[in-house]
Length: 147
Image (cartoon, rainbow, N blue to C red; front, side, top):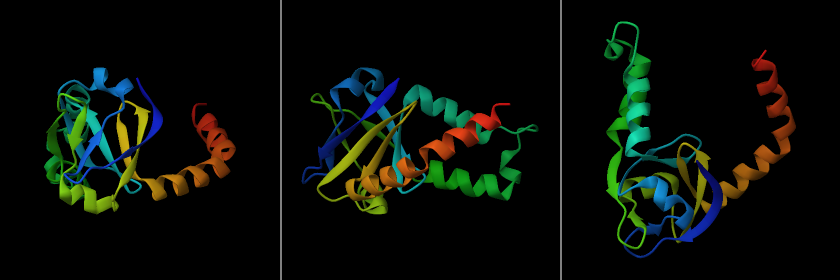
């Protein structure tokens, strides 16, 4: 399980170190893709396979016939990149993904159970503040959905 929050610097070659706690679970190749809420998602190859299957599944296996699904799949698959983790645990963040979320010198690397999220550090601080204000309301809402 990927959990925890880490702040890491981004070097001049757009590389960022993955937290040591994450490296063993990640393997050698990962998938990095635009995420939601102004972050990037990082998946292991195995987890990306599960995500891919869910995104392309439909009752008739003709998911390409649904406009919303086509659009979202373009967003997730079209800008995804397979990235290797180097011998000292760094990954190269493609420039177009770095620009998408405004990464500069540092990033928040956050474990969210089955994926890692990479955030512009300032945006991450703002996101945390917003969620912390609403944490009890969110918990209540999610708890009511379980019934």
